[in-house]
Image 1 (cartoon, rainbow, N blue to C red):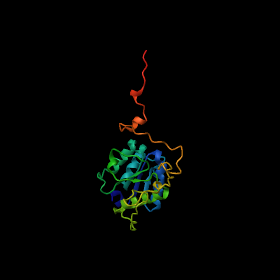
Image 2 (cartoon, one colour; image 1 turned 135 degrees about the vertical axis):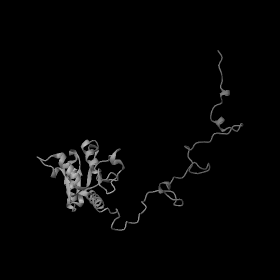
Image 3 (tube, rainbow, N blue to C red; image 1 turned 120 degrees about the vertical axis):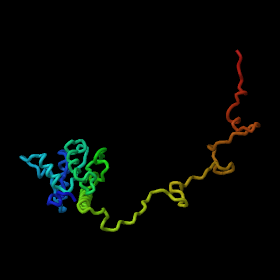
Length: 221
């Protein structure tokens, strides 16, 4: 817990870029609905306010900074300045001062790259809400992420590797028609069955199929 929280400040300061304002307002709304206190530029920094002074007050007066991380956020110098300000009193984030929340599949090679985050993209709204609120509670209380209910026993999915002794798959057990040409004396043998080539005296069966080059007549001019 940071100084801002112990002196009656807000729980979270939501840091974002204007491109991601819709995400920031959704996050702020869900956090306040869950009982947290929030500062967000869209609602708390209005016309006539000194923006830099208000941001500085928000970072100082909040227990945690929640970063709404996207490609635009990572490219923003102002966002980087807010991150550095958030970690000023807790550079290793031992008090979980900084909570990165990814809204896009991007990774930071700098400051945020070594910090655990939560993902809100590619999930439905209910899952995103649960993940956000659960992470916020763990950050504020310093608790672990242990669930309240016992996890279900993992069940092996079907369609995996086949074990020995299970027999061949059904696609191998095909009803092949009988071979009518298997025996020379078969009554079902037809004229369409191929005739085996005779074996020559040399023992090479190919000699009965491929004409010998030595047997060809040559013409003289």
